[in-house]
Image 1 (tube, helix red, strand yellow):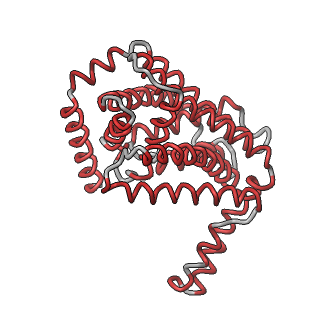
Image 2: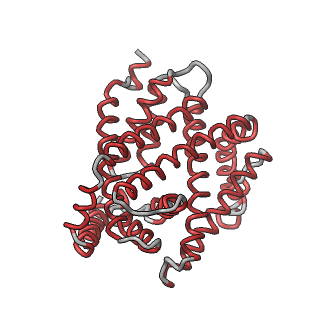
Length: 324
């Protein structure tokens, strides 16, 4: 808890330093000049969350929950993620708790949540990989971070290849990976861990490999969700009178997608998101303040959506009420 408070304090200091360096008045003027863009961002992000809820709902056993219930669960989980600054580390278990509290089995809940998050991350990884490739080609990163960025790109490519391999062959990757740790864990412990991993991985593989059209449907839906985030970037650029080709919003959005992974230890990626946004838009020939304004507006619209989710959350039943 103390360490988290220290990191959060440092992150806030970094954010303040970025805003001060680029000029608070200039950033505020950009946000003010965006006009109705903020309202559109709230709407687009709400639709983004709703579509992700549809993917969850479509992956559940037929007739178990209504779409309305799943949408409310997804918005409530968004509130947990935004208001606690914990990202998916608390939001995903909270989402699972809400599914179980509505009568979904733990096994089905785990598979559905893992499937949606995996497909969402797969599409995000591919967009980020393409964007980072363009940014590296344009020398957007200093030599000090170029190596880690290239390593991240390799990881994104391997992740994509691994998911596609599992989906097409039905062969899991986690269990074999555990078995490689036998020299460290010992034969007995490795066998126990591998058995547990296999039990968790098998149902997900059954969905990935056994229902290919559902996977294609989910990939298409998740691509749309990411496209809505790209549309946010385009709307802000347009509202500020900045000329940008169709590829620019995709590069900006793709470039910031690795923030959660690279700065997972920073609560809410405070400061890190603003710094990376500024770096990316500068590499594309725009004022760094535009990137900071975009990041701050996204934080604000996420907070509005989180409030909506928090209002929806109390309607859910507690798990013990299912036993009454």
